[in-house]
Length: 471
Image 1 (cartoon, one colour):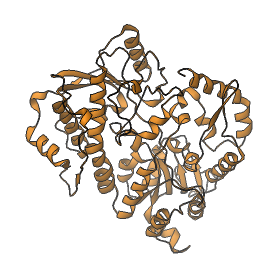
Image 2: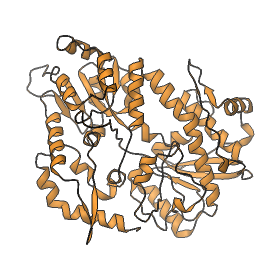
Image 3: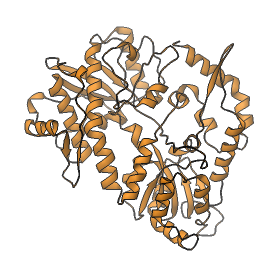
Image 4: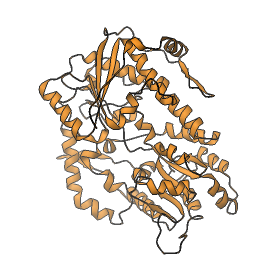
């Protein structure tokens, strides 16, 4: 994609809209719902103004829409993003400029060039989490910059904890300004009509009963398997299960490695005399891995390397009872004929304390090593995350998902559970370097023990290299 910059001119700020927006602490989106917020603007950010200076962010192309929106946008989240930018500019006396760049290789090259030359063209860079760039000397240790307060709710604590090294340094962070952390989360879409058909003659449960099951903490793999077994067949009797057939469940590639994490599997590690080693490969891990494999190989289920093209079409055409895929596919699925609800990933069993939701990634932010105005960079980054938390996230979570996508209160309660259960871990954040998640979390290798043990020394070595590089 050709590089281009979009600058917001302060002279065109819509004062009337802004003052209502800021004073009311909320917004009207033209629909039936007004979301209000009450969090006071942080004292440590007040009065920090920069005389109209241009503040430039280099952002991953796939996240560009989360940062920049035109003033003529009409979709509610886009409008909120536009207003967020104007609010931050007016409040801190800056002109925000976002420059998209394809990547990750192009952005790696740019970031390395900035570090080597001491160039301060960009105040912040915002790459995809999987780009695998180094840290020390390329970007600042964010914990050395006093302006930041990463304990605030607009920062994604789980991700930032996982981005922190042994020496306490954190070079990249993520927060509310990065919507991907939410909309990449894997969920289970359930076809309401098909469920009513299969459950009525089986146990008499309704969709409302499933909501109650989830709320009671009893939505487990056994419950899911029970209903999967009731639906799915080789429609054309050609002995090949494909796009023409019916399924109890399909899991798309974007969600394949998430269910084991949803069952509480953590890729733990420990220090040894010679470095670090992975310690998660236990009897309990194998038990859950094999259980996941059986679920995926059930006669009524399939998993696919497709991110969702044909599985989504099959679900939309009422050929799939359950579809496990990232939540950002809601718009695609809504365009079909299927009436659906959204459920969290199951627990392993009822002894698992809570539901756990994993996503396939996040967009990160960092301050390049050549930046001289580090306080300004930190203030604007904190301000963007604050304002997104207060205005854009409510639009996305409450208005778009709960009232434009969800069509019943039960689904809205399910979304609350999903929001509250999003997690990640060190191995997931650093998987581009470690290369382990795609090996041990897919549930599709019947010879997982030999596959892992054969390469364990390599996995341990890469883990040690990563942990020691900044410690």
